[in-house]
Amino acid sequence: MPAHLRTIAKVSGDVDLDVPAPVTIRAVVDALEARFPALQGTIRDHVTKQRRPFIRFFACSEDLSHDSIDTEVPAAVQDGREPFLIVGAIAGG
Amino acid sequence: MSRVRVLVGTKKGAFIIESDGKREKWSISEPHFGGWELYHLNASPVDPNRLYASQSSGWHGQLIQRSNDGGKTWEPVDNKFVYDGVPGTHQWYDGTPHPWEFKRVWHLEPSLSDPDTVYAGVEDAAMFKTANGGASWEEVSGLRKHGSGAQWTPGAGGLGLHTILIDPSNEQRMYIAISAAGAFRTDDGGASWTAINQGLRSEYIPDPNAEVGHCVHRIAMHPSRPNTLFMQKHWDIMRTDNAGDSWHEVSGNLPTDFGFPIQIHAHEPETIYVVPITSDSLHYPPEGKLRVYRSRSGGNEWEALGNGLPQSDCYVNILRDAMAADKLDKCGIYFGTTGGQVYVSSDEGDHWTAIASNLPAVLSVEVQTLQ
Image (cartoon, each protein chain N blue to C red):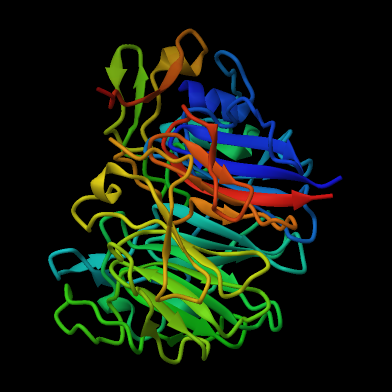
């Protein structure tokens, strides 16, 4: 997660989540928000569940940002070998 | 002994600056919420350790933080600001309809009697309320559903509801202001609202005397005279003595009547302060001289106060929520600049001292007078 979201969640590195099948992008973010309620609204819209514009989702060297949120994440993420990356867009100068 | 606590919101975090009642030695906290925009921090008047902060960023949206120990520690509370029903459209800069979208909380106004009740002014303009210390927020939708909503147009900084004033003699009566819609009053706790813009004249809108569309920058009220309000409009300093039913101009001898904040002395309801800014296209003080102007007559007659402020090469701005007054016997006046300075006068504006010089751009300043 981006540094600012780790601060809000009060964690310092990666977060391990148990996500019930099917392990979709939506399910991963649901599980993250359930564990850290303060993150609700910081990654996706409260109501529409649309990804915020400056947030990207990556996994296994693939950009999943524009996939349907009901797409299952890669198998290597599902079995814990690879991370699901929530990244803040590069938007500085 | 009395002391003061200054709550400073900046573009890159919040800072708490404290002093004893002498206001000579100041301590500045480490940044709270570093890297985030803190549009506003405010304290409950009935529980001075209860603070609320609006924290936002373009990446991660809106958070609301709450402290129960005067800002030492904070916990995020609910950040779900969802408009009541389908919000429809307001007017965009080019006159076309534009969907109402929540962007951020500009201003937090705690109730005068209950530390768990807070009003929030948001962009796109609406008022929200929590009655449970921030655990949940609900829109006070009677305001947005005032029949004129489709005509509201954003100011340069957005369609923000930036001012909330609660009448201390009757908490059912509140005033709000929106850039660029104007001022509104409720007499029933927010269920219904009346536009109170009669007497405002704005040459930059199609009908200069329109009921709505005026770019009100700030309104101030002294608690001892809740029917008298002072307004810094985009241009013009205005005054009403009948709770907003009609306004008249009191710009008087100001060098320019463009500006953002307006503040009233804590103990003198006819003593008011503004910071004139060159123009709507030049958001810095005239002649590069930073001067606060004070009127001791409720407007019209103004005196420049620059002792201790930079009097050359100064090109900062002072934003609408970045001026405040303490309640000590000799009233202190505080303001923050977009250059990261926070200035204090502990003698009603006669002399000024920088109590912070290198903060990020200051968005808001509030001050608490503590025992």
